[in-house]
Image (cartoon, rainbow, N blue to C red; front, side):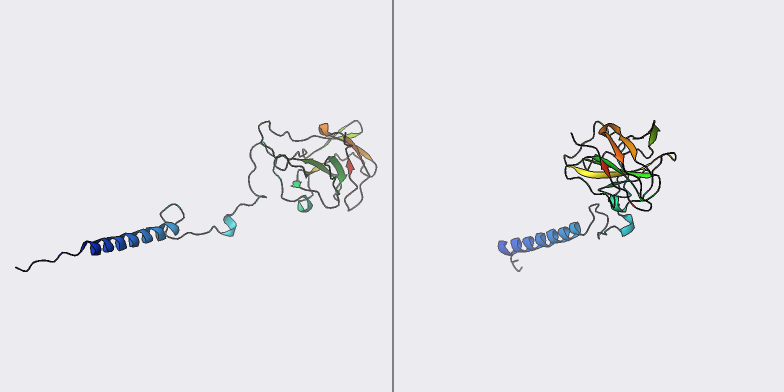
Length: 197
């Protein structure tokens, strides 16, 4: 009988180490090529039509939805946007103001406040006496608002019996009142701002 030779311990340890290294690298390769679910071996990025942008995202209940840019939003009652509309110069220190839009019967209402909790106007104004009265959407009491100061613009429909060719007093909720200069055909009118206290 021929005696069997035993492999030295070093050779056994080396082959076990190589085997473990191969197993670890195989597992690592599988882990990085999945999407986290473990079922797919490749990760796919979402197609362009499956992404969500700010203009189509559903707002949180009670929070006004805002278009990304007031300068490019549609000029229609109920439209809202971040920033100032084309043709309106803002104030450095913030405030609340109004100006006629280029579309007949529609008023821009601009407020300054938190970018995450903008103060936006209801889509339709009312008339009390000779004043146009604008009301604002209430910001929920439990809202978490940033402490920045940015403009937000709302487009408000004014009743048909308001004469936009003359000065109009607009009561802007509890923000104050302004005398809006006459509308200019086909152009944004001059903005009137509530006097800062």
